[in-house]
Image (cartoon, rainbow, N blue to C red; front, side):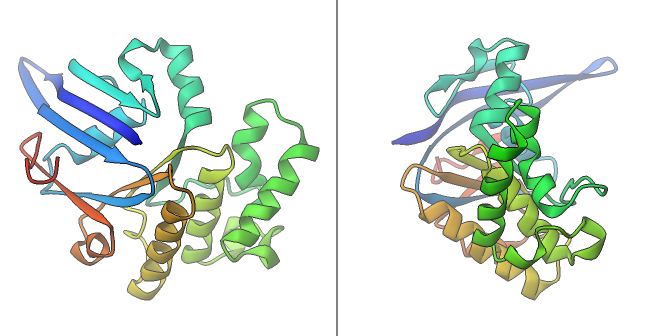
Length: 227
């Protein structure tokens, strides 16, 4: 089943008196059960594509369906709910709350969704154990290594049971050995459920090489061989 179906996406931005076209008719279909990387030169439109798929941005024109939902039809509140419940986000700099413990950081999306601590904590601890941090549930970010913090972020991205995880340079702030471990974990997450998609933007060719599929973006378009 296709998790992402994008057709003729155009995204234009106004910069002073000029119009910049970040996406220029990008079309793409992505199935579940895959670990997919998005590569291309700086300014090619990779991050814009990721933001549109995650309902963080809207296209100027074109269509985009993610997990069966037409994102162009969503209002602001609906888009916020979609992001909270249907998409997991993983960032280069982890975006953990420094005053919260590992399990509290993982549980945060559930707590923001008005779930109770009694429901959130067991699930958060279970996910921390899943990513190899069962002994670190009460540690705060300052007490964790970079790789451990990224594992917390991965666990957090899974807490709401999303079909799609979007990872923006997830190994960019890690050494090569730790980065390889994180990539292995992301591959496991992608493959342990047949309808889950992990989509990663990266500048690292070695990181892209471990993925099931590589999608190349050039000048706002998807290379036809990768579409």
